[in-house]
Structure formats: C-alpha cells, structure tokens
Amino acid sequence: MTDCYKYLCEFSHPNFHSNTVAFELDKEAKEFKIRHDDPMRDQEFDLIGYLLISTHIFLNLYDKLEDVLPKDEFSNKE
Figure 1 (tube, one colour):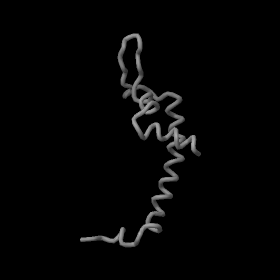
Figure 2 (spheres, helix red, strand yellow; figure 1 turned 45 degrees about the vertical axis):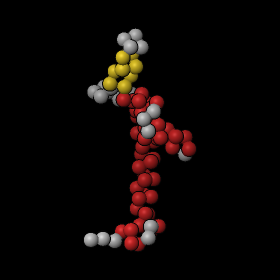
Figure 3 (tube, one colour; figure 1 turned 135 degrees about the horizontal axis):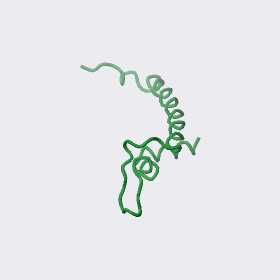
C-alpha cells in the first residue's frame, strides 16, 4: 500500500510523475510539449487503477468523519 501512496503523491504535488503526464520534454527542439489533447499513454492507465484504490478509501473515511468528530462540528451554526 505504501507504493500506491507514494505513486499517488507524485500526482498530488507538482513533481516528476504529474509533470510527465502533463507535458513532454523535446530535447532536440529544447521545448516542452503540452499534452492537453494527446491520447492517454499506458502509464496514465496505471494511474487510474491507483486512483480507484484511493477513491474507495477516501469515500469510506469521509463517511466515518461524523462518527469521530465532536457532534457540534456538524451542527448548523447561524
């Protein structure tokens, strides 16, 4: 699970993996190519699998927040 977390963190924070999905470095032309309209590559499909894992965990944790936080956190304060 730690490997999944580390992999997902790469996309949550602006660093190597998130940047490789967003753009490519063309060393010969000395420029970055933004990949906005390009088709997905195999490595992006790997990301979807990790996101599916984290989404399930997030939803379960979110649903349990009300059980662990003080009751006045969810009251309507007007």
